[in-house]
Length: 185
Image (cartoon, rainbow, N blue to C red; front, side, top):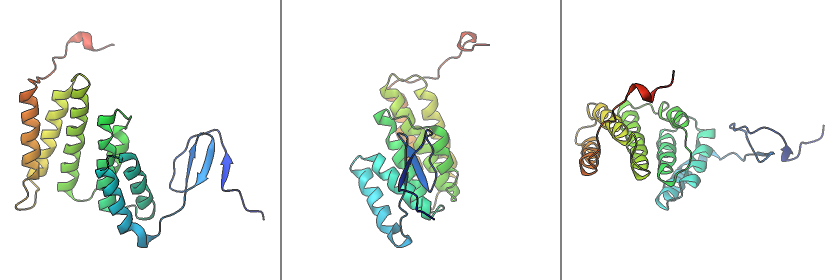
């Protein structure tokens, strides 16, 4: 039996744990060893600090391919993906939600969901602000949910909630009034 080449031509775009098909060429991704996960997590954090969220996201995907429930990788991929909002990259909410739903700690899941909404709101406000008030309010709602579950002495949710409130006040954001003309039947 002959071995298949490392890449083959294809007409579809598919992303799985085993392979990535882009630009009509399929590459077999090389698996990360379990022993390299800790070091890879540090690299992902480093790339986020260097403002390279795409590299951090890629590293987290490699980690999650070998350790699908790695909580630190799940948090970091959510942060890396939401880092991209400000850069006008298309990042689907469904894709982020898939990773958020796998975070097992209720406090962290609520807290990072709030961060996603806050970052989306900041990106929207920088592009004109339509619906930014509603996004900030959703972030604040999630921070309140997280606040009720926070560990003793951890007031991060309060700091984030207050930050959202100040942005709303400073920018004089208000709820968007919805009229019957906003809907197409």
